[in-house]
Amino acid sequence: MGMTHQPTFDRRAFLAASTALAASAAATSRELPRGTPYAAAGGPLAIASLNGVRSVARAVDLLREGYDPADAVVQGVRIVEDDPNDDSVGLGGLPNADGVVELDASVMHGPTHKSGAVASLRNIKNPAQVALLVLRRTDHCLLVGEGALRFAKSHGFREEDLLTEHARREWMHWRENMSLDDDWLNDSERDTPVGKTWDLLPWQASPAKDTAPRTNDGPNFRDTPAGGAPVEGGPPKKSAARPYIMEVTGTIHCAALTEKGDVASCTTTSGLNWKIPGRVGDSPIIGAGNYCDNDIGAAGSTGRGEANIVTLAAARIVDWMGAGQTPEEACRNMCKYVLDHMKEKRLWRTEGDRRTPTFDLKFYALRKDGLWGGASLWSGGQMAVCDAKGARAVPMAYLYERR
Ligand code: ASP
Image 1 (cartoon, rainbow, N blue to C red):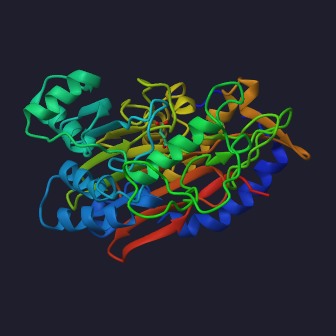
Image 2 (image 1 turned 135 degrees about the vertical axis):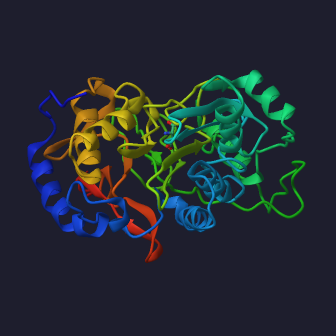
């Protein structure tokens, strides 16, 4: 796949971004001349989205112990899947519009060029492990919904309720504020109590407290005042004319490279919160949210999956690295490619003197020679890496400076 399109996004923003890219390149990539034998890269390494600092450390430990890179990435992301305080993945993930947590995950294994994935999986908190079982124990690439659940249960996974109290409250708040025309009383319609209130709900063991909305990797909370353009970031606000739309995304992508130069990659997520039940994002779609090629490297993404599915970002990034681009160049070019192909007007807004996308998307890439990097549509993004210097967060290149 070659780059045939000239980007059409804001040129001034791009020039500003290029300066920032140059400044951040040293921090996000290790420049190795093309053709450098892998041994020069200095041992096993792993990269991930920012929520994966613990994951890359775990993955590299497992690689050092001789584990297959697919096991290393799956056990790495498991730390985040198991974490009830991370509301983007596994247990504690934010639910769909019905209040049900539905998970997507995929794993790709470079040495066998095989993949496994699950989508819309309910009640199982480690979808990446189930995806690896699809890869290892079936002739298929992707199982969904009820079939995926039965497959997981037949391998001994236990069903559990993945909706935490925090996630339930966030969902209920969204549900109540979704429309002024339904029978749910939203924030501005409820009468003010004359004293402290007791929550009355089954979870309740102590008086209700307001939980501050979390921010993570994606477009976060978007305020959509009537007639106005969505505002990036910031806490949700309600508008008398139209309540806020809360849209949070979050995902973990993790890729690993062994000492011998074998690659594997994994992406796992609870997807877009408040999604239509059954919606599948890019994370379990091989070539979109996750891809690897043992001769070249691996790539994956977090952020608005719909923008990624229609551009097949991960496969393109790996291809472009194969054609000689550095991981950071390939990720940055993918950001441009996505915007160049984004024709839906509602996904663009005017912000002063510039036209900008209303969402974020981040790409992460790892090349077989040990070079790694990432890029994001918006400034402020970071990614995780673990190499001989240990696990850490590093800034990513970007196209648009947040104002
Ligand atoms: N890419 C994920 C999806 O669209 C969400 C995310 O990364 O935040 O399902």
